[in-house]
Length: 302
Ligand code: UDP
Image (cartoon, rainbow, N blue to C red; front, side, top):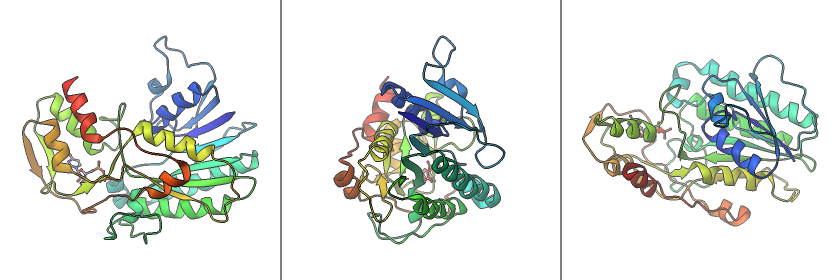
């Protein structure tokens, strides 16, 4: 099997690459390396592992390499900051809508049999229909979320009997290798770095806002389950929440690290986010295996 992974040098991407290599697949990474890192993909010897080819390539602009025999496409590449998208929507239109359109077309032209693309829980925005189901009416609060929703409908046009497609709405992903330096840094790596350097943990607002945290290894499993599912000839493209189904407050996350907490200015953002995961449980037999507070305790005590 040959899988192309866009954004394969990034946080979720590099876990997917190593998992695909473990399955004995041939892997091609397309990454623009704006936030992805080559060091995520190299062995301690300094070489790339056998079976892996890496291209520096911006899928939203310029040529995409003419690779043959693409069985699967896992499309993870995108600019990822909700806050930044509020200031620079054009970057997000180009990166998410235009980039996705180009790579889906490219994959179909190469006979790709299965496409899975990363969408986001941000599409639910300030909906109050908790827990969010895939059928919950989206209420995006940012260009990032709007364009991911647009990407889902573009992908829907590619869903057919020969090329099956699926969109996965990732909730708040955490785990090893999450960036704490370049680009967008999410709350858990910020808190981890602050804890490790004896700095106070910066909690926005009262910290009682909640999120649904899902472990990166579980997210990668969901991607592979979706990619390799038998072709059921679905009439409509499946959209699946990828989440733990558990609601955790930011204050609980901060307190589990321990140490001093300071409250900083609150953001304009969803107050609660939690998924109903029964659809992915039932259709893909997928369940999360790692709990966020447990994981933090292990990191803290390591
Ligand atoms: N957050 C925080 N302190 C920080 C960074 C983020 O309390 O230094 C909060 C943020 O306001 C949000 C939650 O942590 O309520 C998760 O933020 P993140 O950026 O990780 O994800 P998202 O906002 O996309 O859910």
